[in-house]
Amino acid sequence: MTSELIIDAKPTEVTIALLEDQKLVEYQKEGNETKFSVGNIYAGKVKKLMPALNACFVDVGHEKEAFLHYQDLGKQFLSLEKFTKQVVSDKRKLAPMDKAAVKQEVQKTGSIQDVLEVGQPIMVQITKEPINTKGPRLTGEISFAGRFLVLIPYADKVNVSSKIKSKEERTRLKQLIQSIKPRNFGVIVRTVAEGKRAAELNNELTLLVKAWNDCIAKIQKATSLPVLAHEETGRTVSMLRDLFNPSYESIIVNNEVVFEEVKNYVSLIAPERVSIVKLYKGNVPIFDNFGVTKQIKSGMGRTVSYKHGAYLIIEHTEALHVVDVNSGNRNRGAENQEENAFMVNMGAAEELARQLRLRDMGGIIVVDFIDMDSQEHNQKLYEHMNQLMKGDRAKHNILPLSKFGLMQITRQRVRPAMDVHVEEVCPTCFGKGTIKSSILFTDTLENKIDYLVNHLGQKKFKLYVNPYVEAYITKGIFNLALRWQMKYGLGVKIYPSQELGFLQYKFVDNKGNEIIMTEEIDTK
Image (cartoon, rainbow, N blue to C red):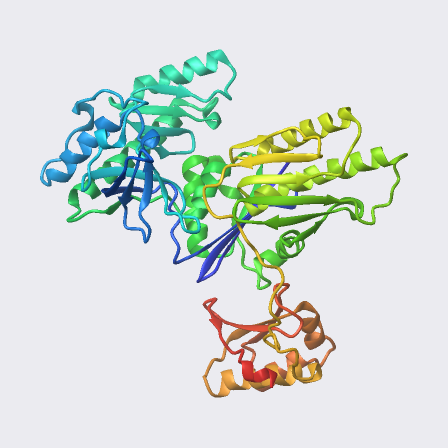
């Protein structure tokens, strides 16, 4: 299996699409004004104790106060708390970590009010984004994640991923990390560290320790709390860190700044693979060029078709997601209804596993498969679903089919589910139901071009239109596009975009910024 990462970096947002064997499996979009806060470390203040919940609310600078449960404090919280107090109170001298005192572990059955008090400074890390009315979820067990290792202050243990099966390799990694890690730091060795040389692991460990020291320095220099002490890497690099593997065929970026950022990161974690990072310079939108736009339009709606006419209906609610499997107009080539239902359900399982990753659906998912009488078929479907979900990074649990033919799945949710609306308000009538005659559309475009060139002085720009309209404008030897260039200058360029509706258009300047020219008055 080969994987491609396509990154569409626009002035207002960055969108990332992960393709596996040319099929879209993950899709993430983040506005440039929005920060990816999971993994961020803050020095905050305890605002309110909630003894009934055995938890507290912490001010970390978010609009909503963050939630910290006693069970999430971590075993070494008391040691970290003492160190934090020293850092906050002493602005001149930075306390050396290797000489810091280690206190007893937090008791599992303790009470939040025995450990914390209102107004107390506390170092915490965000584990879950704010969702709807809930604020961020916090942990008191600070960690710094790298490609091969995870650094945990005060843990002072080395743990190796259970997915590394070789006893010799586990022993080698454990002894190696024990010999190079600083005192009072714990390390988790990730699965991808298997077979890595000592130099590679030592380089990453040095970077992670530096990140900790920078974090402490920020807290010490802060004049008031709360303060953001460590910011998680951006969405692009964060996904690369978790997803990057040797099967990546290419990482394609359409923005020079993001291209350099990605290239620098890949050169750090896998210097021999830096050549797979490529800069896209085409004029056709990058997602259109690699077939991503069409897959988004077909795969993100309420109804999702898959093999032989069968389809899924996906409904989202506050508490859970419901998926209904339908055979549709599938050509029944199987010998009987039971075999036909089994084949439809097996195909549905494949599409469902992709949809869970693609939409980042979390919480409870209930799937209504087509009823099957055979217990053997039910068991095979359950095993098939488990096999398909092995590639999913999110923690999940799958239950066998109930007597009603329902499969229940729980999947970790750390941020709101990706909700992409493929149905849109008509861009040409703005929901009114009446538009100008479509034969006059090219006249409207020419009027806009004339206004841009002769009134605003914009000599060079790109005009994006629906592919069918682009074909009409550019067809023939002496076509409309050529006439416009002769009249308004060669800086007028026409390109197709699959994102745009039939009578929709978009003007973009040379810097990639959209020139807003659409007005509701156009429809009257």
